[in-house]
Amino acid sequence: MGKDTTHNTFLSYSRKDYDIVRKIKQEIEQATKAKCRMDLEGISYRSPDFTKIIAPAIEQASIFVFILTPNSQRSRYARNELLLAKTRNKHIFFVEPRECEMTSEFILEYGHYNKSLYYADYQRRKLYEELLELLTTVENDSYKDKQESINEIVQIGDSFYYADQYAAAIPYYIKAAELGNSSAQNNLILEV
Image (cartoon, rainbow, N blue to C red):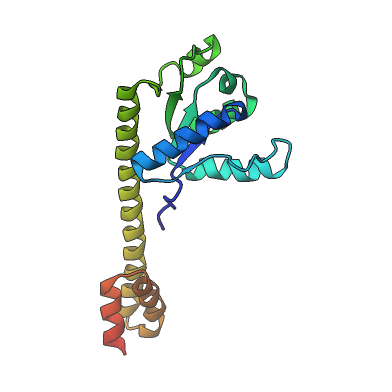
């Protein structure tokens, strides 16, 4: 089935910038009407649960927003989150909440990515538009994936049905009907 798009955007940051990032998160959510995920609970980096929580959150997100500050560039954890997002081919956005010079190392590794100057009204609005467009695309792709999966379930049911194995077809039609497929619902009505 399709991916969960509830939290399709992950915000990576240094905890030293928490107050700024919390405000950015709220503004992005308000502008895009989509929920963002970030570490709000203050999970300790030393906790064994840290990677068990953060890594899947990044894996499940389609969009990765790196809040670019001097602190985040120095944060080993934020940099590792960014590396995971890059490795998994996430859509990466760099958001600069206030003027911040990229370190030489960051320029070499990530200088080719666009950077949104969040403190500039025009660029902030442009970021919202780009995120909204990408989120819409992701949601449409997720819907298509779900429909394709449901159609595959119906096709399996049909293969049993046309082979005169009606009892074997019913569980597939029931599953597809529960997922809202009208063809499967009709097939069940015909069988009853």
